[in-house]
Length: 347
Image: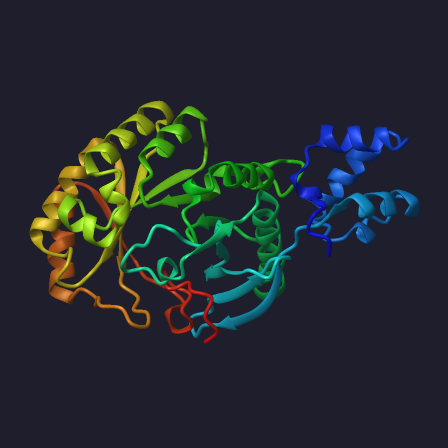
């Protein structure tokens, strides 16, 4: 494949129209091309069967499809499926399907690797290769939707942008991909069924508010004490808790959206009553709910799960402050598909 060609998924309809008219084609052909790209999920110009062969050849001569190909998959005992995708330039990243009752949630990636370096996350230890393009993200979701129908007999019900990478460090591509996924001319998914998770890039959280996003926002907090968060999440040294709090306040005031906090319970690190008090104090900034997550070990790490007593006391304190709290049971840990475990490993 000639990687110097423009990925057709990166073009708008007006751009495709301009190209076709310039090549002597009818303008209406652009709408047909767009339908093949976004509604039918074409992965090749040969798929576009209602276009004349000479037109398909023109498109193929000038553009390419930046597809992602599933090269490996593995199933968990709990039904979770992990997929290893490969890009046209031979980079690899992971996506996950998580079944629950009659629903299936896709956990998708936005980057190849991650530059945030969170101490508890296997992905952060991979280093950073590059951003996924909006077209690659769309094809990842379209592929997972098809796989969900094949494996579980139902299309995707929800998407969580919690896979490899920090989405707000790939802002434009991620929002473009979400726009394409939600478009009625494409998959037509409601933005209310999409949740983006960020480690706390304060200026970009404000930018989300200014852009009037309609999907859900989740903050990977993991500590509400600066000294502790500095150690486990280096981003806190750049945007500390005071800056993050201000960004969350701004976001809520502009969007009215309730924030969800993700809090990974690390034994002996962030699970004391002092940690719980700091957490409930921090979350006063806006209406919210808290998801407590059990820790999923990965090779060569230094952390452990919180004990049962510590977890119970932590929950009791949060509930005593009338804050909604749930325990998110991790799925897929036996195949390294759970929170913080995505590291392009074949298990």
